[in-house]
Each structure stands twice: as structure tokens, then as C-alpha cells.
Image (cartoon, rainbow, N blue to C red; front, side, top):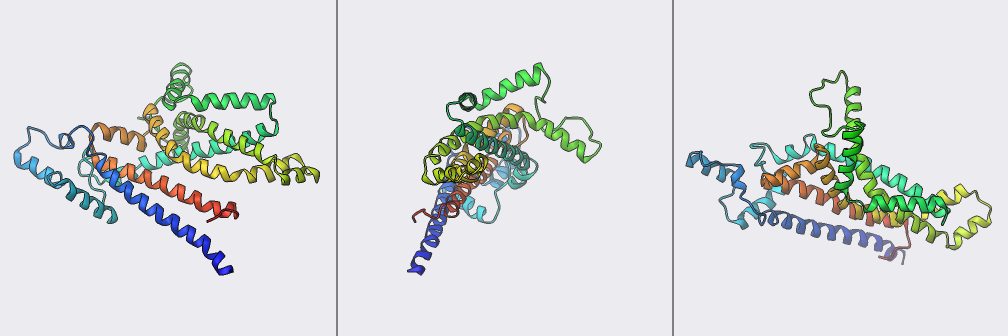
Length: 330
């Protein structure tokens, strides 16, 4: 009986991994064909009418654009497993992997990571505080503020921040990741300059997502307060801080895991828009430039990478459920 029960979590894990692999293969297929139906000819960014015919044909053959679409798909799939994502059209001769993971990848990771950590931390703490003071001024005020921030579109919030704090008050940089033309005396000065430029986009992304985490935590904690074990904790005379953060917040973590995983795609799309608004040299700005240039290989590489992160985040969330709540049925 114990062996049978012990095999259930293992079966669940293997099933979820198998589903993730199938979803990933579906993403690979969609990722290839979706850019082929986009308007525009990718050869326009590679060749010119002034080029000799033999040079034009050589470039087209080099990128495989003269081959049938099915053959291109097969080669594309095989090359993925080889770690070969092709060459960029707009950055001629540069490997897609180099284009993505040069400096843009780390810029996006730092922006998304900082925004996610700050929004989760503040959202969870404020959610617990608001739930413990239900219908008070703190609860009403924080709910209104976070709802307003959550409802404002990312691009508009970014433009407002640039207009007031960038142009009018000159409190934050209006573009870039570092001050152009400025020679940093040491690494610390570079980090401070980088962090200063990061303030604007981080605030925008944080305000866009903190409301969702706050509302989920508040509603979950309110539900937890009605459970018998919470009444027992209060009857024991435990301190309010211990009840809130040791019992209520801990038991409200399960829905938060799902919310965080579900919000990863929205965080990526929000980062893309924010990077464009602030000219932040990350993957979002790279996607925008690649769309204008019909750079299929770069777009395929970026979207496949981001989609893989999203799929893995959901897989990790499902597996964390086994650890956080052993009552889950397989």
C-alpha cells in the first residue's frame, strides 16, 4: 500500500514533465510558422537591388530562404537541438544566441527580477496587513491605490513617469541603461549609474504587478482567518505578528505560487513595452527592432527562450504544490 501511495507523486511528476515536453514542441512549431505569416519580406533587410545577382542568390541560399517551407521547418527543428539558432538578418553574420545573450538578456533579467521581487514582497506584506485590518482606512486606502495602479496600462504609466519625473523634474533618466558618453572611473560608479537608469522602468513594472499580488494575498488571508486552526491560534494567546506571518501568510502561499507562475508571461510582455518606452537595451527593445527588420531568426530565438521560461515556471509551480500542500490529489 505504501509503495502504491509513494508511486502517485512520482507518476504526477512524470505526467507533468511529459505534458511540458509536448507543450514545448507545440511552441516550437508555432514559433516557426507564426513569423512566416507576418507581412513583409525578410530578404528586403538582407539584399539590395544594387547587389549583383550572384551575391543576392548567395545570401538567400546562406539563410535557406530559397528552400521549401517544410524543409526550412525540419532544419530549424534539428538545429534547435544542436543549439544552432541561425544568424541574425539585421545583425548580419552574428549568431542569434550571441545577439540575445550579449548584454540584452542580463538587462531584461535584472529588470524583471527586481520588479518581481519588489512587487511580490510589498504585495504580500500589504495584503496581510490589509486583511488583518479589514474595512479600516489602511485596508480601503491600500486597496484603492493598488487597484488604480493595477488598472493603468503599462505604456501609459511609463509615459506619465517619463513626463513628470524625467522631463519636468529631472529625477530619473529618460533613456538607456547607462549615461552615454560618460567614462566611469570604476566598477562601483558604473553600478550606481546603471541602477539610477533602472529606477524608472523598475517602478513602472512594479506598480503594474503589485496590485495583483496584493489582492490575491488579501483575499486568501481573509479566507484563512475563517479556518479552525486560526481560531485555535488566537485562543492560545499567540502574538498577532506570529498569527499573521507565521500562520496566515504561510498558509496563503499556495495560491501565490500559481499567481506568480501565471504572471510570468504578463511580466515578460510588460517588460517588453517598458523597455521600449525607456529605451532600455533588453530583449523587449530587441524584439521591437527585429519586428521592424523582419529578422525571423532573432524573433524565433527570443520568443522560444521566453516561452520556455514560461513553461518551466508553470512546471515548477505545479511541482511546488506537492511540497506546499501534501493534500493535493494526483
